Length: 71
Image (cartoon, rainbow, N blue to C red):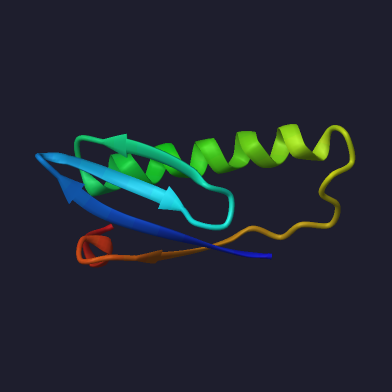
C-alpha cells in the first residue's frame, strides 16, 4: 500500500493530509506537520490492524506540495 501525503500552508499553519486514509494533521513548520501526519497514520493503521482490517501492509509515504522539498 502506498499512501500519499499532501502538505500546504494556510494562514501560517502547515497542513499535511493523507488522501487515502482521510487523515490530516497540522504543524508550525512543514517538518512538524509531516511528523504529526506520520504519527497519525501509524496510529490509524495500528488501530485498524487490531480487528484484522489490515494485514501485511508496508507503509510508503509520498510527500507532495510546494513545501515538500524542504522536508
